[in-house]
Image 1 (cartoon, rainbow over the protein chains, first blue to last red):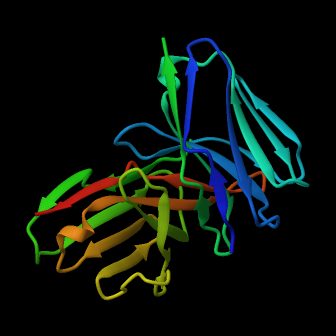
Image 2: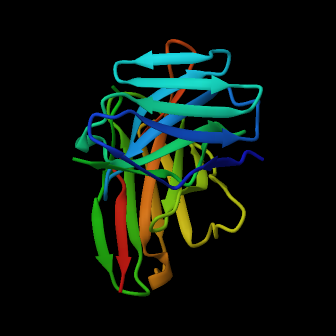
Length: 110
Length: 118
């Protein structure tokens, strides 16, 4: 089955760019997703990328997909303190469910 | 965007009692809903897949008699934790699957329910 791996922590300074990386094992996922979870809250869909795309940009967010290496990244430009949260990448499971990485905790220092 | 609600947001119950959590898709119909569980500082783990009008499909290791799922309509799924124990304390999140206009299968998550069993 699908396995999704992420680094657990990332710390950046306000105004810098953040890059969160993710690797996955199952190349059959049609879509790959990034979710944001603020403390004590549910998940917010940030963006997703179709598996035949290399890049998707949405305002401050840029998603890069390297299918050959099964590597997905999320870049947040001009990171703000409000971006502090846990970011999960996820791939599609066989039933339409999502399989999540463990999440990367992003800390933004002023 | 699509909205999914969960009720209650927080619940504290005594060991041995049962708790029902509701998940509703407010502005779209969802044939399929999912129930996830999240332990502190860990990722979300799928518990079960809930399909409207049929029995839920449970993941390995999840007791179906303990976690009762009912998907009675296209906008409502319920999870009942029966005979709750302290180890059932967790953050339960549901999601509803919407087939999007661009062919995507988008999952929208509820805000989660924090269950504490004393």
